[in-house]
Amino acid sequence: MYRDFINAVQKANIVSIISHQNPDGDTCGSALALYRALKLFGKQVYIYCDSVIKDSLTVLKGYENYNASEAVKCDLAIACDCADADRMGVYLDMYKKARIKVDIDHHKTNNNYGNINIIEAGVSATCEVMYKVIKALDEVKPCFDDTVAELLYSGLVTDSGGFTFSSVSSQTHAIASELKKYNFDSSAICEHFLKNVPFNTFRLRARVWSQAKFFCDNKIGMIVFTQQDFKETSTCPDNTEGAINFIRDIEGVEVAVAITELESKNSFKVSIRTSDRVDASRITMIFGGGGHKNAAGCRISGFFEDVKDKLIKACRDELGV
Image (tube, rainbow, N blue to C red; front, side, top):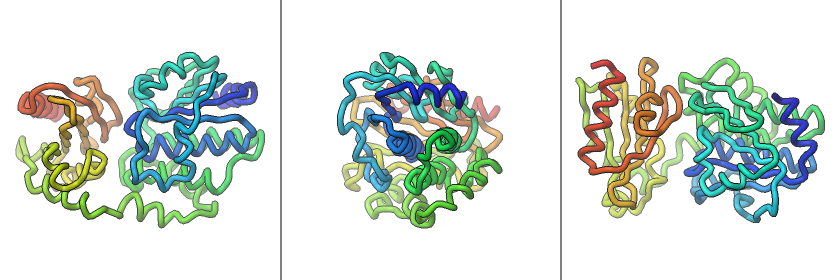
């Protein structure tokens, strides 16, 4: 599959790279690393995302190139970290019209929607896959530099939970070790993505943590972010990232649920984090979502109490209690 990808790159004049909506460090890290590598490879490259790049991701080098200009046509379109093609949003049409479509991902729910699919289901991050993709390109023409390494390392750190999730393998650590041989500040990356918390985010977290609810003998923990919470702490849904992990870390909790009220009436974003014996993706797939075994998400419409009850039932069923 790497040979097919390299052949497609060599034949393409214009390449478009697409990250998923509501981007995280992995989709941006993998996409920006590939953007940089293909530029060094000598290609005309564009990069897109159907969402604003949130402040925490603006430390990633090259982020300003997202949506900076639009390709008139596209020979080769590459989706990065998009478990489902629909996650490309408005750029799905561009992807479909490309002569060759590539899907690079690590989600086990990915249905291989590209002409070329480079999928390693269950590995810690798409950046883990992208490392091997860019290394294969680098063997044809040098295109792997310090910036590429820094971007890939950033994605690994964010999507692996600082190398703590069960998806982290010996391969993950081996790739991280190879990346650290390049010239960038890995400690600064970890400090930024794993430790730095803006004060208003702390206020938001403290507010929702103090109102956390627990069910099924504390096996299920739930936090809720309301529009009122965002208003009173001068925050937004971007500031919810990471808060769910504190609930999952509580002794005895096997399923952590975070419900975020969106601006659209009766619309909620849901995040699930689970222990190793519980499959988060099975819970979210009931509601049309997806993700990984221990981290998944979905969107649900309806009245809040109904949404909450449906989620608790789905969690109970998965727990078998």
